[in-house]
Image 1 (cartoon, rainbow, N blue to C red):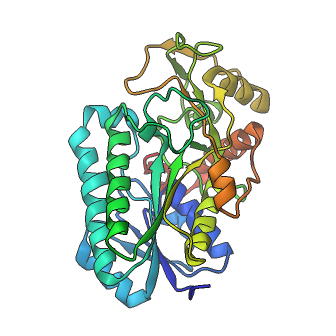
Image 2: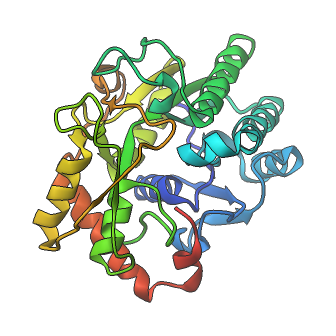
Length: 339
């Protein structure tokens, strides 16, 4: 086993990144968080974790952190994640997702970092013809968000061919829920994710929720997604780190549960769990939304020492709603940060 030195987590004050910090700290790992706080919150980073406010694309800063803290591995979460926004602001996404990642990778390569875990997405597949989706499926993104993540995977692949870098790219499906202990969750009053929005309705923070398209070629006409609890996803990052430290080869892995729920099914589950009627309204389709995204997770289970603990839609919803209700008493910047 390689020496377990510090791990740099970019975007570690954000939604998924903060849960990964919790998972690594629980495992006794030494962590350094780098986050510009554009969408994250300092308050969800534990006090005993080294925190640096800054840009993950600042090569001088990254190299200094690697040298100062003995960074051996990097987990890269920092980036922009909203599909609809990526359609309207594509150049922003290429700047924040591709250019920043390129600079970070160069800094890591020059400093001798050889283990890298990348926050990728199921959006690299576009509107897949095969469901569940295997990692070998055609990569044809239908929005700039997916395109920018795929380009970064290509950079990782090409860099690994010419250096000692080994990487795991984790392709997330729909991440939801919150830390069961209430230490972190999906941040902010502005949201685009279904369960986050439904939780805000339950918490009295918004009046209605929209169903964006009810005429898809799915059983009930609404989009179907594979929802994974954020704590299970965080555990997958820890497992990926263990895998690379044990000498594992570079790979890309789907992160989901292998089964999906439609928008209507999710909203019905929220109503069942909370006793609150949501009264959803119909709305036009959003650009860039494929009808069905469900993961083939056989490679994930075969490659990593990982099994889910929260594969239950009611648990996902309950933790999300509890977190949303807790935000009313949270520090101001937790409530202000975006989702």
